[in-house]
Image: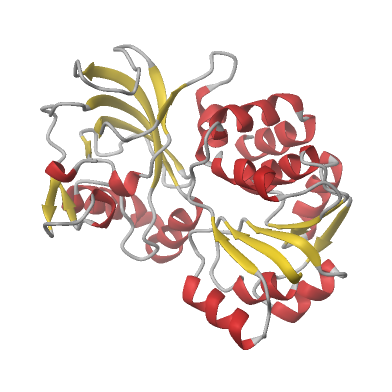
Length: 328
């Protein structure tokens, strides 16, 4: 689990640690990855961009240097990375071998990381960060070998959010009404496709402005595309219309908890996939609204999540068009 890499405070798991040991020497069960690209999670990238602007590169480097991992102290989130397996200890259970190009499917907030190129090739304008350095995976980490049929940036984008469609498919029942907030984004579009595959009868895609509404309408992933500010609870619920069985929250801004609750029927389910979510606001807001809803935290891992996300990407022209549009 990486306890031996925790420098401070003692007695916590790597994700909760303030500082990790990112030295390259391997302990039993570990794998060292030669880093090629980081993918900052959307909430973290937005917060860093808004606060630091052109100084974002220096701030990301400072976080990694001081903490031994990419763990945004404001959002509490990190992201993931792509790299090439450099060395594997004999007792590693991950099934990787030197030379494999992999995506780490665990958060950068618990991954020992050292950057050696000063992020010289990153312009600070994208959540995907070209980088050189190394990262360490533990025996209980998760990694997937990248598919050979997709460009690395696209594959990384899909795998970055692969937990969202997997849990959506698990929760949505045939005949359900489903609303996805942030529906034109990476996790949102995949969640729409997963809900459709699970048999949803009504799909509502919520986006913040006309440009995303046009893109989502063209993609054909939702039955209804509506424009609403998800931070305005009453406006969001009105835009969705009849309360839905499942609401999937895939936004990168705070303050969307109460609207998602209002949009969901009593006895329904809200899935939060945003690291910008305040879980105290969600719990207390539901209580204050006397809303009988089940609220789930999307933890990023569901068995088979990477394979499902890649299959949805390959088989849904609408999903692929939205992803490629973002990269273009």
